[in-house]
Image 1 (spheres, rainbow, N blue to C red):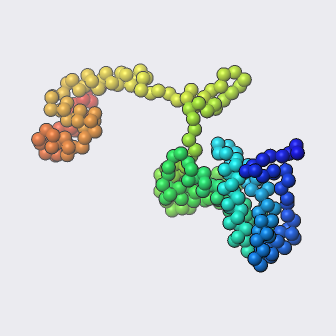
Image 2: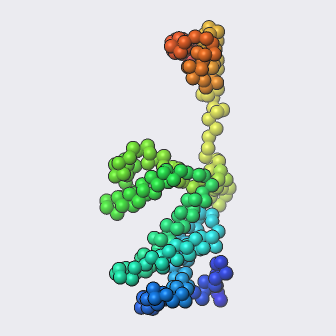
Image 3: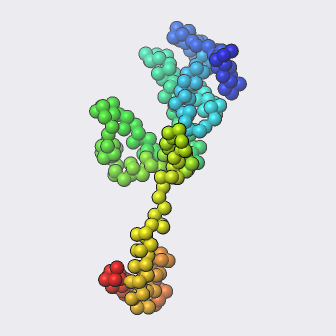
Length: 256
């Protein structure tokens, strides 16, 4: 009982392991309609599910949940396995189990990502693995983009979108003393001297403008309005707003 681990009520220390010959025999019985044989195949391959879920231990998910999802993948593999193919059942089943778990993690991610974006990201990861095997080195984003015939920016955006979120209080270094957290490495650029001085310079330059120029720049850059919206508000054409805005910015540069 030393190695006993309870997952979903299953005592993992007593899980059976089926030999290749026994596996084939039980598959034949199952294909003939023996429901008991299917149960035997499930129990005889639960250790396979256990070995797969070890890869996902760092995702913060409950082991019981991952085990149940992995069992769904196992059932799909059992029901679809083709005995006529010269392939070991584990070789066929592992990708099915991994795929099921990845779908579960993807669909339960706290940050919702569109399916099209996820598809691009997972295709990029598959291409990356293929290029690593082909060239024995880590491929660049440009190489992955060329292989998928997609813009580089699309690949970068998709891969960033599926990254797991981290906490600001996650430790990133610990040498026996006080740990260094993620938040310790983030700079607050809003209170830097350069930003403060730049703000003074902008206010100084704005004070040199006419009231109309000040109003246009305030509406455009502090309130985020379009040139058309500014034109409607102050009663001039969009072309005039564009011309006045350009002249005002050039005027400000002389004082900054």
